[in-house]
Amino acid sequence: NKVLVFKSQDDKDPRVPLLPEEARKLCQLGCKVWVAAGLGSSLGISNEDYEAEGCDITSAPTEVLDEIDIVLSLGPPSPDMAAAYKAHHVHIGSLNAFQNGDQVREWQDRGFTTIALDFIPRTTIAQKMDVLSSQANLVGYSAVIVACYNLNKLAPMMMTPSGTIQPARFFILGAGVAGLQAIATARRLGARVDAYDPRPDVEEQVKSLGARFIQIKLGETGQTKDGYAKALKSDQIREQQIAMAEYCASSDVVITTAQVFGKKAPKLITREMIERMPHGSVIVDGAVESGGNVEGSIADGLVKVHGVTIIGYRNLACRVAHDASQMHSNNLVNFLSHFWVPDSQAFAFNPADEIIQASMVTHQGNIVSHRLNLH
Ligand code: NAD
Image (cartoon, rainbow, N blue to C red; front, side, top):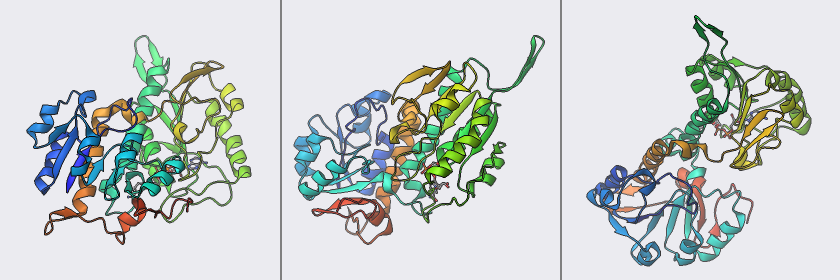
């Protein structure tokens, strides 16, 4: 029940995994919470703020590990931490395990336990712990704000004595958690919004937000039992591109959020389609981290192609780091509280529990995740 909160490998990430108020909730459960010095500095939160909530501060996290059972983080263990962990340590964070196969094998060899917050199952009971959803929601919001900031037009219709401005046209591709929030945000700003997703269930959700759902006949599409889209075949992707080209050509903003769980994101917007878009229009590639939906998008870059601005900023949730940290902290506290056993005053991550079954990646020298093909 001794917990250390540690930032992450990525120094540029301004989010904080656990805010002071949520750290207090863990202390109230009965945990002893250590916090790495400077943890909250990107949000103006001081070490004293954590101390005031009952936490201890350490400026040398690897040196206090002997006293620690569980490490909470935004991401995977840093190389220093991974080298310092002993077999009894449990690291909890978004591990990005599909992209970090070599590291997963290293964690297995080192024998410590890793729990991937980005593998939390899409079940009702786990919804409040679902980091992927809480952050994707903010990605959708930020994608619209970033697009508007780079667009030389207004989003809403405006009728003024100087003339009438037509609303901007948005096309949102992929209507999962991020896409639906992008639709809602663009609608709140008064834009006209079209959207497409190959999962048939999504049409009603898109329409309920006041957007138009684009019908594209691709033959059989569908979703897995976990609610994720099935990957389309290459001829279906081609059909989709042909059908979407017209919508892209008449859009001021295209926001793509199309993902297939555990796979590279489908490349859906081609250079040809981009060249037909209006001068000054903007594309935000919200899938850039998993390979990108847009030809020519660059991770963390802004490029102009034929007068079209293509934005590939990674982790757009970082642009609203305060609220992203708040949601992450809530997710973490909800996760940990679920596994707290008051009688023994300790956490029990039972491998038979359905949330642990889905999210545990390495344990006792084994790769236990059935989602990874690394055995
Ligand atoms: P995701 O991030 O895996 O993918 C984003 C979207 O891309 C999905 O809607 C997917 O259908 C879409 N997509 C895939 N291929 C595409 C293509 N070729 N063209 C256009 N779009 C394409 O998905 P997500 O946001 O994690 O959500 C997946 C589903 O799971 C949603 O229905 C969501 O509501 C559901 N969900 C349920 C829970 C829960 O019950 N606890 C929690 C989170 C999400």
